[in-house]
Image (cartoon, rainbow, N blue to C red; front, top):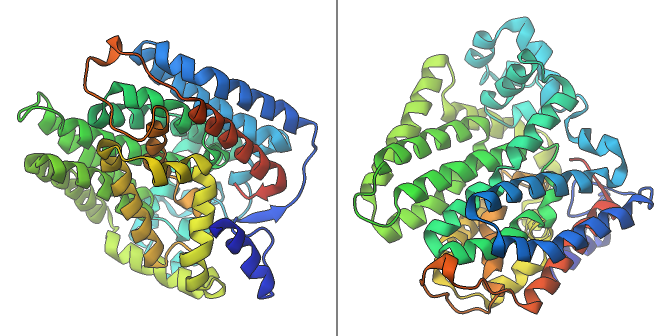
Amino acid sequence: MVVASAVAVPFRLGWKVKAPPFAGEVEVPNLAMVPVVLAVGVWLAVRLPGWSARLPWRRLLLVAGLVALGWGCALALVRGPSGLTRGLEGRFEYPAVVAQVDRIGAGPFVDTFTDPAVLRRYPVHVQGHPPGAALLFVGLDRVGLGGPAGAALFLALAGSTTAPAVLLAVRDVAGERRARQAMPFLVLAPAAIWTVSSADALYAAVGAWAVTLLVLASGRGPARSGSAGLAVAGGLLFGLGVQLSYGLGPLALVPLTVLVARRRWRVLAGAAAGAAAVMAAAAVAGFWWPDGLAATHARYVAGVASDRPFAYFALLGNPAAVAVALGPAVAVALARVRDGRLWLLAGGALAALVAADLTGLSKAEVERIWLPFVPWLLVLAAGLADGAGPVDRCPERRSPVPWSAAASSLLVVQVGTAVLVESVVHTVW
């Protein structure tokens, strides 16, 4: 209902939009690739539950990353090889800023970044993020991964590590059996459409590893070995993440929910120290994060935000876009799954998503902007594999990993949703 309303309302009001609620336009591709990609997806949907049940844990993590990478590339190829790089081409994208940074130098670039007169000269996506995002692409260019192709390769490889990171966190919070049940839904979600040539796939990976480090630091036992180091590392990674994307801030609600539930106040303190260290280092380099957010907000309000009504996107457009990215399986899981351990992760993600929505800083394009929140909601689908009830805590590897017929059907629906959207909507990323 939300998706249908989000599609219908703009046309009823006469808005000039091309493919609501997505950024893109309706354009049917060469249909020769569609059945091939669909067949690959269905084959994976059939095979993955068995692999997730039988593979040794470490091999399962590797397979999860490889399948996530392969499925994302397969979806991008629905529109031909250009689909692998289209999200990084053009004057609005990050690679376009490399020449400007080379000309003025990295130091002056950071030091003057929040100057309104300077900020408006940069590509739109650079204006919308802290300078760390642009410097990342400058660094890629320096090591031989410049241009859309090199950057896409890096982003795809980095983004493929999101699923293994999330699985580690799910295993720690809800047990290995739940993690194994979550794996197929994590890698075959429709969100895979936007994980190959979108920088937000990298932000999702950084955020996922930051969350996972903090979850592991807060794990079972009051004095888990190495917890202090993991806590600081998680905080450092969160600090780095918000230097890449302002939008990663709300993701902190996911580990915060777990830390509060487990009463791991020392882990929280270590994480705060790590994040503060990164923020301080950026300030010394010339970038004060609050000033950057304020400057970006000013540019956003003066630009595209003026054409995007808050009420429509907050209530319909954004929820519809992220609903498609999550797929029908998560809609079913939200209604049926009652496993409190899975909700410990998903609840924090849902709160983060609502917070991001209400800020008004994300109006449209959330199919990619909210990628960091998506995997933490996808874990709820694990509860569909054997019903909505909690799973016991018997030794995980010795107990069978259930997989219901309903879960298999929903996994195929997830694949079909991804192929349908990629076939009908020529997305920007």
